[in-house]
Image (cartoon, rainbow, N blue to C red; front, side, top):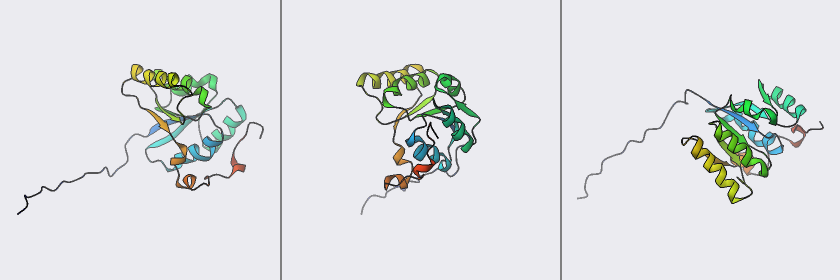
Length: 168
């Protein structure tokens, strides 16, 4: 006769967290507009709180489109960090280190679009900043294409005409 096995009960959370994670999306290029920004509509535990870009017209148009009160230039990045819990970096790769380290030093979690960095030294500096500043911080390599099933099948959730460009 086999020994009696105890049954295990697996408990799963049935309600959303009481506090949503407030995000700033930093960098408003094509990937941010067709995958990252629209994905916030489908996230029960997160909210788009701020955007950061070097292009004034793009900030204004996208801020209005997403109903945002917090719209910042790169020069005002530190102000953006004061109103969010996390940043999603969708910047040119060579800027990842600077913006991730600044976020970590401000105690803000970092999601960084791949590749995380252009050098191993940059990557180590980003991780070290998170560990030294606030050991509980998360530093995560992100992949915008995993946000939405349509992105994995090769079609983006937004048409190219809907992308706001600096000269539009």
